[in-house]
Structure formats: C-alpha cells, structure tokens
Length: 143
Image (cartoon, rainbow, N blue to C red; front, side, top):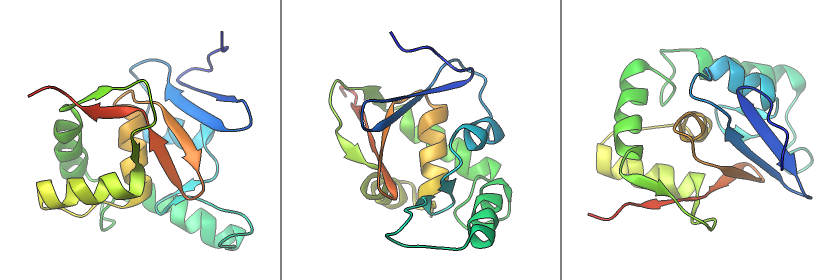
C-alpha cells in the first residue's frame, strides 16, 4: 500500500504515478507536489531543456487566471463538466495532449496541456508522467 501525502500522493515503480488523495487539493498544492509541471505540461530535462527562470515563468502561468488556455474559472468549470462524463479505468487509456484536443473540439475552448493535467488530477483521476504529457486511467462512461 502506498503511503499517501495529503492532498496528492505519488508512487514510483520506475515511473511517476500521481493521484489526488482527497477532495480539497488546490492548484498550488498540485504544483508543490509536482515541481516539474508547467503550463505546457511536464518539463523534460534533456529533451527540451529550458532555463530554470523560464520554467518558473511557465509555472506561474498556471496561476495566472488571464492566461490563454489557463485555469480561469470559466475554463475549469467547462473542463470539470466535460470530465464528469469520464469514469476511472483499469488501464492507461488516454494521453493528456491528445485528450485535451478532444476537449477543445467538443467544448469549443482552448486549454493548455499543464492546465488540463491539473484539472484531471483535481477530478480524481490517476496520471502517469510520460515525458511532457501524462497518461490517464479514464474512459468515457456509458451513455
């Protein structure tokens, strides 16, 4: 059994798997537990090297309510409604970048990958960090 860190817990078996451990996590909570997450997704050291200063700027964008595709109240509300049509799955079904594009087409709004990952975590789904993106254990519920 994995020891939970409130409000988010991560375990590593060679891979970082994260899930909210409770219902009261904030964006700041998630950022404190996932220091490599920024508005574009996870920072890939070596693959797309960016300076520490630039990474901090991109992290701050997640908290900027006016950022294009960021965590404005309207974006979060729209995405949370959309995510409510999903259930947890037993297998890694979707990548964050591809699924955020599905959301954008269906909802008619733009969302940055990092903001999408934050909302998926806040909705209670499990993620596996996969380079800049996240794989998610979620599937569309029965209609």
